[in-house]
Image 1 (cartoon, rainbow, N blue to C red):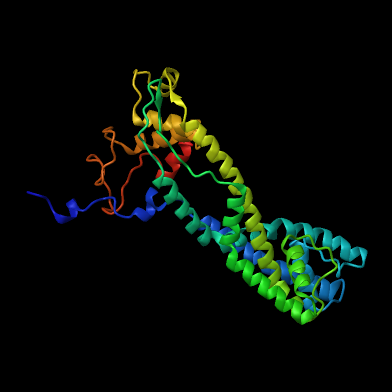
Image 2 (cartoon, one colour):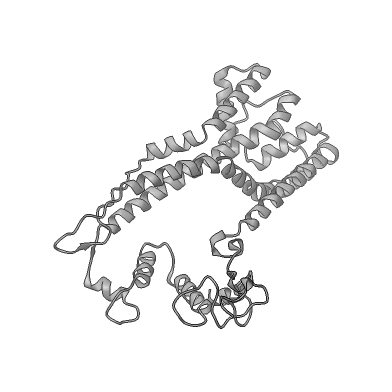
Length: 345
């Protein structure tokens, strides 16, 4: 029959959400975050029961405040366990909270600034891409990338970007700190001082809120947000400096000359020529972007999907392939798609 039925013409590969185009599955990370938040709620509840009703007979707000001050490692020192039984419980309670809830604060702090950092990174990437030039041809050898004029970042610029990224969060914390200070009778300098020792988790213990209302506010809003923001800023600065050094090393790498020894090393199939796949594999490994077993696993995965050995993956699937569901590609033999990949890795 000419042209076949409409059903036969319909592409097999339609749902990209189930394929590589969707990227990595973030459900595991989101689930981990939700579980951490649930654990935080349970942890705080246990702290209230333990310190308000079993060991110390504190008010509920004081128990909440002490619990948050403990797992955030601030430790103002105004509240502390007074009996051996309470201290023994605090040993286990504190270690558990610092280990588990510190992870939660780290994720929360990163999420507070993720969208803004992404926008800054996109602008920076556009600026870098606009500066790429490919017009250099040295007589003594080939410079494999031409002139790559990547902006030279500095520690100052990294700090400036991180502060700008968190500007609204910092302003929010300062306004809240001044409000807390006004309620507690502090000066503006004292309020800023309290914000700093809290956000950095130094917690000297000389300044802390005394009233129940401000302790409640600090427990649920000020302390968690300030610790998260500061952790995100310091982490961003640290990552930025490492990235700056890696970029410097990459610039130096790309200015090297392509040698005969490089060609020999790239020519993995020893046919005397280097194709794009061999070149890409060599460069990614040389730049420490990926290790060789991972590249080999991906290439083997491609060979598994390419049933007719044509060297390409077709949108409509391979001709010798059948599928009960016309909307889903059935690129697998023995076992599932994921099973095959994990076996290679």
